[in-house]
Image (cartoon, rainbow, N blue to C red):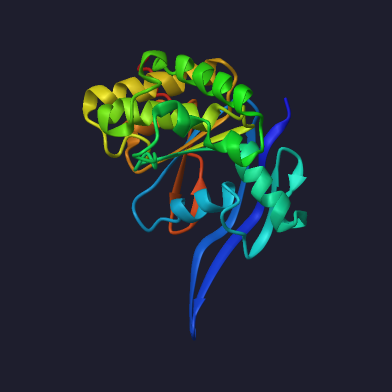
Length: 234
């Protein structure tokens, strides 16, 4: 199966005058198409920096990043913008829905930026809302939706371009337990449909919903090894 994400020796250093901060150090990672992977770590661990690089919102200082086989460093800014719009679906903690637009108008926005025909945009937006169980809320504005419904609308917006990768950054951070369960069930359903999902969180119980869990600490990524079984007494 083809890799969607390939990181090799990735590093990110921020400089402020004489001060240099290594946000990421020697990060190597491969995520295959159709995987659901969680990256878990506390605040300041480097997970937000890694998410920004995976989303082509920032560039590494060292190392390489290949997205769906393409070296991101080789792409000019206009192609990077197209990759962000077409190949990556973003889901954020704050939903980032425009309050004056209906649900389907919010969902169609990536297709507007892609220059798609209005009729096809509406059709695909409504289909995406159906996929997340919000077909009957298409004409509702965000203020008329619950927190869980708003996040599902945001997920519909993330999948409407049929991206190679869905990046979910703390997607349940503003939700109650019932809405959190709904969103995680939806993520699991998208995963079973073959979507590639990277879930970034600081909560181990949320990370446990993924098929593979990676930990990041002080800018270094690791994959926990399974515990050895307890020896059986003779």
